[in-house]
Amino acid sequence: MQITIRDGGPDDIPAILGMLDGCVEWLVSQGRTGQWGTKPLSQSPKTVESVGRYMTEGSVFMAEVDGVPAGTVTLTGSAGAYLSHLPQPGEPERYIHWLASDRRFQGHGVGSALLAHAAEETRRAGISLLRVDCYAGDDGKLVRYYESNGFTRTQAFTVGENDWPGQLLARRV
Image 1 (spheres, rainbow, N blue to C red):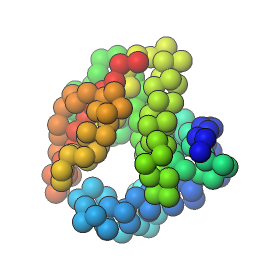
Image 2: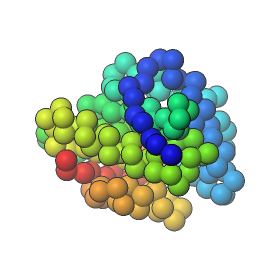
Image 3: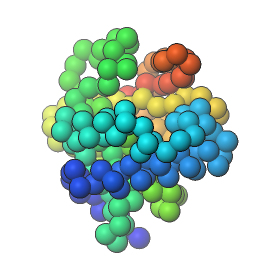
Image 4: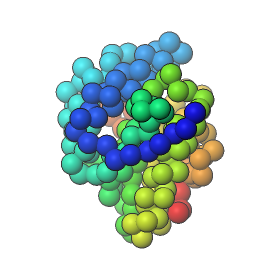
């Protein structure tokens, strides 16, 4: 199985939303509803708007396996407004949004390939800081996933009415 990564665009929005919905379905099947809830993200106007906005504000990349969309990641120049209460990095950065993969390709390295691509794109832009935030609740598995891909924990945080537990991570490239 060969993973190829290409630039994404507006035509990829349905595939991206489908991947996000698949992730929610998988999380729910694991009893892990704290991260993204129980409803398909494609039914959330806020999520649909976010995916579309990052399409124009950043760079979207699609991983494919044999021409089939298998994963996605978006890079922008900063974290989202929901993290504006945290200290800013004080240097240029690239920030990861909406890393997701099609569950059919689980365990085949699609997410790691996209993270490596994000690091290379950051380096190519002459920027040495790549950051991401993720859900830090439940068993912390997602935080450990990013750590296994070269990221280091920098700051824990909570956000929203329900004090959603998050972790900010950084990687030097």
